[in-house]
Image: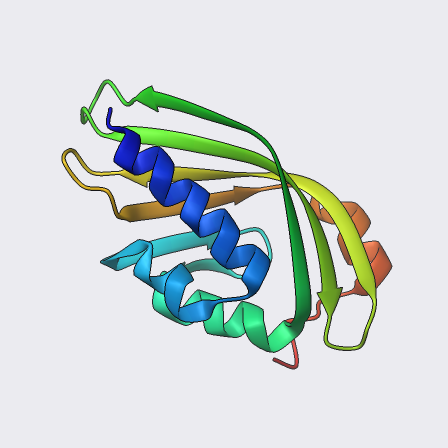
Length: 134
């Protein structure tokens, strides 16, 4: 595992905090994908503009990073645990903790797959599906 992959995740979190769509997409390999509880599986290049269209502000507070080497592929996996204070386009603030799991192919410092993990039940009850109109 290289520190470059951890640095990529740190840059990703800063770009998410800044709502910097080009920097977010640049963190991913050209065919990089995101698996989201709300949106399912999408290319990163499609996911982040859609997220930006539903958001007016994001405040990311990192809690911890965890890294390992995936035995089957020898790729690296990094999990970022953080608090997300998400302000939607309508001004509603939603706060939750989540884990984003980042998979890197061997030798690459660009994300090949990101899986977002959080409990959607409280969010759906509170705000509904904010992507429906995005």
